[in-house]
Structure formats: structure tokens, C-alpha cells
Image (tube, rainbow, N blue to C red):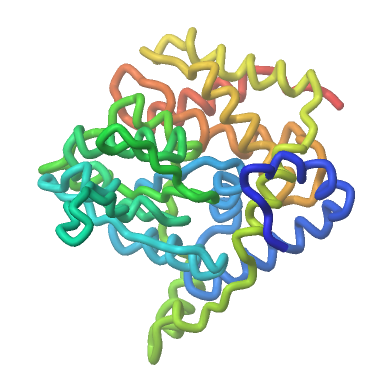
Length: 329
């Protein structure tokens, strides 16, 4: 079924009536199983990556090289039958290298816009902190408004549009730390971590004679993703849970070790991610567990700790979650 993107809001009620929550859960599980054919990744973290996709957000993966960040992005794109582009960030990368630029057509005697790699469904921005601040800022409009403005003309990015950016937290020479405004554009920030012993043996077995990516076949199309995004938006959040989320973000603003707390937009992001996670688990309503699962990945990178370490920000979020009472059903 082809969905008219311009009228996609009309599909919210019909989808929720026709497709059951268990069907949504089975669809996402099928997608997860396909991705895990190529990359060994913790189930909870993979769910958070997919929750960001279904919530129309973006993901920042902060981890050491060789963990599988690029592989995860490629596996996701292949599993969804989506267009995929990779941007390798370097200090000399220009904004036009990402968004595209106007090139003069001598035959037509006019300038024509040539789209850059940002014009794809899944965009991997590798080592984003190696790009200059000017180049980093070129992604702001793409990620926030799903569009590119060039030479006074606005070009729309076709949905779904999903950015997976990576950065190495260890090697800092020649890097440009992401400003708070840029970090806020990422719905979740995760580290993948090293695999378990058995999983690492499985990686060697898969890589022994072939590239595991080659075996991945698409299990969903873009219309399926758009439908899941609409269904996630229709997930209910009761008033006590809304108050719980507001209390969490407000507590980060008064924490003694926090210079900058989570903004109201961070609270909206927390709700959106919790809604998507609830859908992944086959529910039409958000639970407190959904909020507690998504809060660290959504909130930590949106605040600034006094010693400016990401570990400290996560510790603050953990302390806040331990102090704010969880609403009782």
C-alpha cells in the first residue's frame, strides 16, 4: 500500500483500527531479527534505536571504533528497503558536501540543484565530531525540519528521514565537540558496548567466509515504517505519567551537579520515545517502565554537568530517577 505522505495524518485512525498492537509488535520483531543477522547488538539498545526511528527522531552512537555502529546502520537500511548514504566527516568537509549545491547546466543555461547524501532515508554521519562547526550546523535544518535550503530554495527530504551519527569518545585530537543545540536534535544517545563472549564468537563465524550484510533481505518497505510512525504517535499517555516525565526533567534543572538541565523539548522527546517503545512492545499505552527505559538515553545528552563528562550526566539522570516517585497504576 502506498501512503500519500502529504495526507499521512489521515491514516492514524484507520491504522489503529485495522492493525492490532500484537501485529505491530510482530512487525518490529521481524525487523529486529533481520538486523541481528548482521550485527550483534543488545536487544534493549536495538529497541531504543528503532524507537527513535518510529518517533521520527535521530540517534547518536558514541563508542569506540569496531563495535558495529556502521554495520548497524547499514543493516537497518537493508532490512527496510530504504535508500542509504554514508557521510565520512573530516575537518575539510563542507556543508554543500552534505546537503548538495547548485551546478550550472551549460545545455539548459541555468543552475540545477544536485542533491547531496542527506537526501536518503537512512543517513550515516560517521565521526560527526570531526566535521567543523559550520558543517555540523548544516545538519540542523535537515534533522529538525526534514528539509534543505540552498540558494533561497527549500528542498524537502522524503520521509522517513533517519540520521544515525557516530563519534569516538576516546580520540579527541582534531575533533569539534557537538554544541548543545546540535545534541538536542538527537532523540537518543547510546553506546553499543562490547558483545558478550558467545556473541563475539558468533561474529567470527559469520565473518569467516562472507559479509553477513549480503544475506539481509528487506522485510519492510517505507510505507510500513510510515504506518508504524503514525501508530506510535497514537499511543496513549495518561496524565500521571506526563506529570512523572515533567518531574524528571525538572529535577535535572535543580540538581547541584548540573549546569544546564533538560529543556521542555527534552520532555517532549522523552514522551515520543516512550510512545514508540510501547508500540514496539505491542501496547497502545505507555507504562512507567517505558519512561524509565528511555529516560537515560533521551535525557543525559541534553544536560550539561559541571565536569562536562557524559558519565556524570548519566549519573545525574540515574540519581533523579531514583528520587522522583514513580506513579502507581
